[in-house]
Image (cartoon, rainbow, N blue to C red; front, side, top):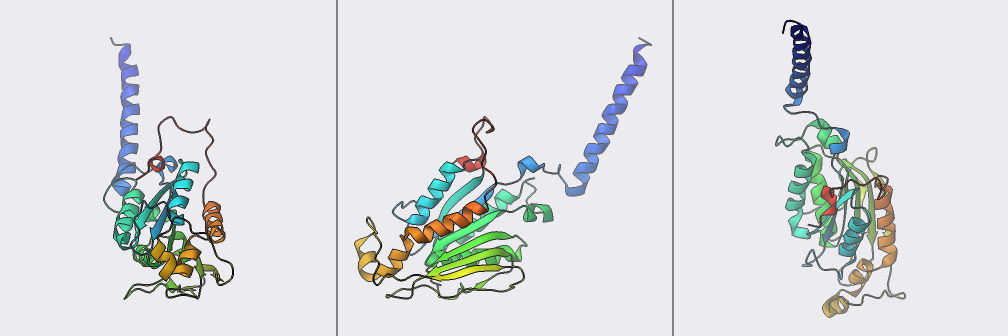
Length: 263
């Protein structure tokens, strides 16, 4: 029994040192610091215009989110929101960024944010409103993409807040409803305006099969830019530039990631 005492003493010392290290890690932020593997995935949010439902697959932005989720289940979490639901999107972002689940966001948790936002019509204006709210919290946004942006009363969809790294605007100038022709950066040193791209559909029409007849009758050009594959090809390209390298099937974890579940 006496021979075992030194070994037990050494074991106790190791446990004591490990405990002190753990206390130090917890004392700094109130929880164990998140490891890189627990960092949130890229959040890609789309906002539909008008009174469109978030699951209406006739609309290009809904289909784009579905495709991105299917092709990158381990790299992103994608959602579609109705334009008036930007508050829900804001709450979800804060929930996903709160890695240690302490109810508040540390500076590191905010700076780890990888957020991409795009939308059409009222949805395009809603995403600017969301980006501005995130700016007040100190949360960066990688990209905003507006398609024929139409602002509701009291909204400002023309000035992109300084927390946005890149912003792009697609618009068409004709018809009863047409989008904002120009967006600008509140702080050009922090935000790159990729471009304000003008499209016209007076001569070259776009096939919008499946869209409601009243959209094609009363707001044809506003609808055509939404279903124009050239527009969405450019937006998709900008989104993919921001995605981390895809995980191969052999490297994928056995359990599905948070971003692989459609919500």
